[in-house]
Amino acid sequence: MLTVVIAFVMNVLIAIAKTIAAAITGSASMLAESAHSWADAGNEVFLLIAERRGSRGRDERHPFGYGRETYIWSLFAGFGLFAVGAAVSVMHGITSLTEPEPDANYLIGYLVLAISAVLEGVSFAQSIRQARVAGERFAIHPLRFLNRTSNTTLRAVFFEDAAALTGLAIAALGMALHQITGSAVWDAIGSILVGTLLGVIAIFLIKRNSEFLLGQTAMPRTRSSILRKMLEHPDIERITYLHIEYVGPMQYYLVAAVDMVGDLAEHELAERLRRVEREIEAHEPIVEAVLTLSTTAEPSLMP
Image 1 (spheres, rainbow, N blue to C red):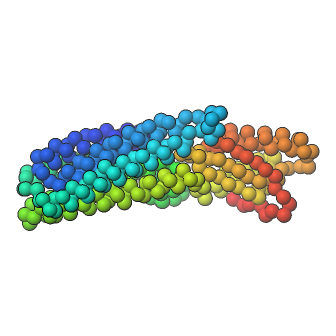
Image 2 (image 1 turned 90 degrees about the vertical axis):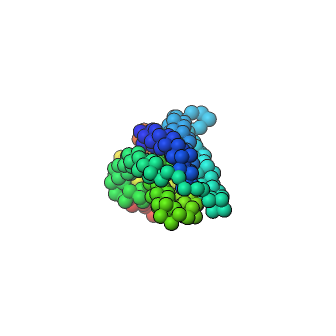
Image 3 (image 1 turned 135 degrees about the horizontal axis):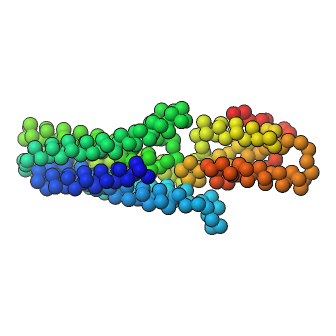
């Protein structure tokens, strides 16, 4: 939540500054950047809603909770980035190729871009810090963690900030080439490149959220950790099947085939299975656990 709030505040400040600078300079790249920042600010609102609504506990109508609603609102954020940021930037760039903007005050444009870079850097540093800590916990590279993680808001903020910093560099280069050559074509190309970059990021975010909505299995390290803890349970002798699926950020639905310790009667075995399920669900990430009995021919799973 802190990462999203910081990103929202920074993007609103940046969007206001860029809009004023675009009006003064008439730069196509700067206008594209202002559209980008307003799209980012709007997306943070969706992400804040996602965090709030997705954190609700389960009830009778939603036995797995509301975790997947996080991906729905994040999907809206991805579409917003594509429609507002990418489309507006590309279309304005194309228009500027046929109707070039006149020269304007470049100093103001460079100053706003520099201030924007500092503000975006603050937000980006926060998302990098969070990704690095989480990556170390799972013993994987932060970028790989951001691709695999179920924390869709962190992924969105990180890649939006990365795109924003890259876009600022493109806008600065477009303005500089416009100033040096006197040709507004470079500025227009900068706008198109910014829009294309936003489109690629938006498609990536939409794809990942769609995959989690369809059903995404847990990370291998997470699966091994849960398997190891289950095998340590005094009532479980071995496990022959294990399926762990995300039902929200860091929330799992677990199905397993187990061989119980001892040779119990059927009614006693059923009661013990239910008790073990409840004990597994007592661990916060496991929203629902369903256990069935293994057959003797099935091979055992090892962590």
